Image 1 (cartoon, rainbow, N blue to C red):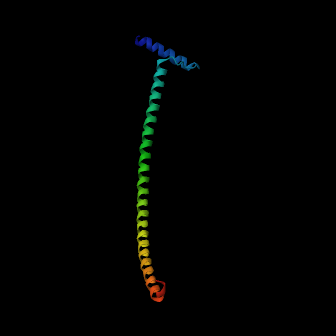
Image 2 (cartoon, rainbow, N blue to C red):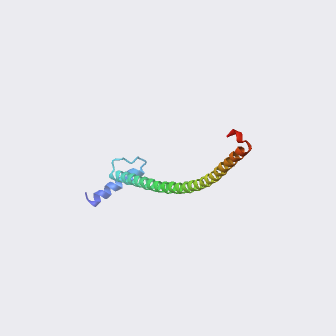
Image 3 (cartoon, rainbow, N blue to C red):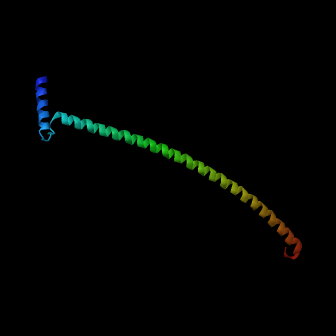
Length: 111
């Protein structure tokens, strides 16, 4: 097909476009544009979903770090409370021992 024949078919295509008619989907240019737009759409979709996954992973990682910091702080507070309970338990054991010693002195007949 020569350049003149292609120019003639292009001009007839342009004339048909401007006469109020509908472009037929049998033209190669139409299928080329459909392919270009479809590939651009899917490329944009793949790029955006990749970015979304990357941002989501970063946000979840940040949330995980914050939660681990909070859990570490709570664990430290529970360790401090456990130490206080251990001290109270030791004091109650000594108090129980002292009360038993006093009870043996005051009430020697119950041994």
